[in-house]
Length: 182
Image 1 (cartoon, rainbow, N blue to C red):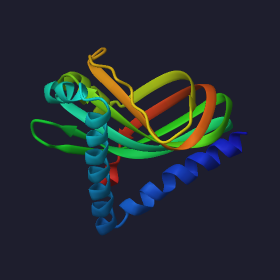
Image 2: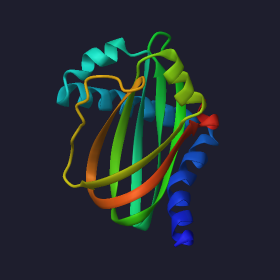
Image 3: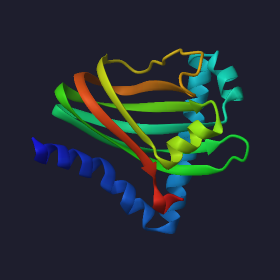
């Protein structure tokens, strides 16, 4: 099982490093992440209009595109961008997740983080750790949470892309700066 988890993480994360080796490919990757962030924010505002006001009040935001697989153990990876709304400064980031539990399948999803203040934003960008416990079943093409307030300085929305995943797991997710893209 450990070999499967390592294989999942390698398949998910190695292409990101390979793209960042070439400056043209790195620029293309940044442009793609910026486009995904714009599309995802538009989707968020369309599906949960009350989030537009939260976005206007937010110090910054981050958007990630992720892929996750589970077969007893789960793992996945993705990439995204964190943006300071005042300066438009962008920090390109990666994410990885691992877990154990009952799971079978895979899913693509996008996550939007809205940060209420500079401290919360800077903490995420510079330390970037989130651990979670989850039980979920995802099927279909899209969906969004509809929180309308910040909780401890942050609001999180997840959109499921195509995919099917049934899981009950304890997972750890780590977000970190993509040094070769910054």
